[in-house]
Amino acid sequence: MNVNFDPWQKWHSNFSYSGAKNLGYSTGDKLSSDARSHTLTSKFSSDSMHLRKSIKLPLSSKKIEIDQNVRYNVDFAATAKMSSLDVDKTNYQTYATNFSMDFDMSSNFRWRLGAGALYANYVKRKKNNYIAVNINTSLEIRF
Image (tube, rainbow, N blue to C red; front, top):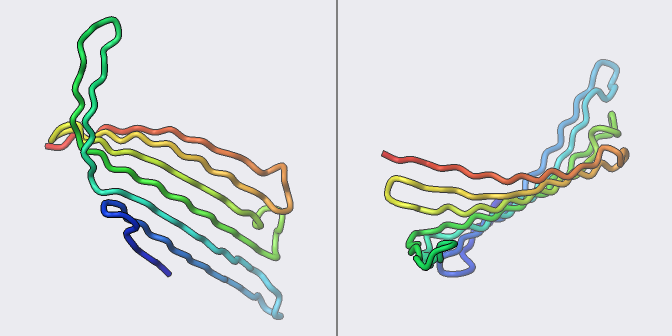
């Protein structure tokens, strides 16, 4: 299920939910596989917005004028996975968020700067819980 709407003039959002239930039985009606999952996601993004700013160079009186288009992207996802088999490893929730900015430096260069975090919470085995953090950047050269 997806819901899309534009809360402001240049901002767009998307909310979605997905769920799955997979059961498998072997001979003798014995449960051999059990996997259930639920996922909620939300995304916010912007159209290109004009950014104009001047930055003073260190140890100099000169200023650099920055005049470019910027796009923002933010997303969040929450997933719950459950199973009655192997409950230590298969019953957990994850929460992830990411943020990025796309700068159109010129007609041939686009620079992306982003960061994110993920938290995993194991229901039965707390020692498996973890937090992951990422910082990323990329430069796109277009011809």
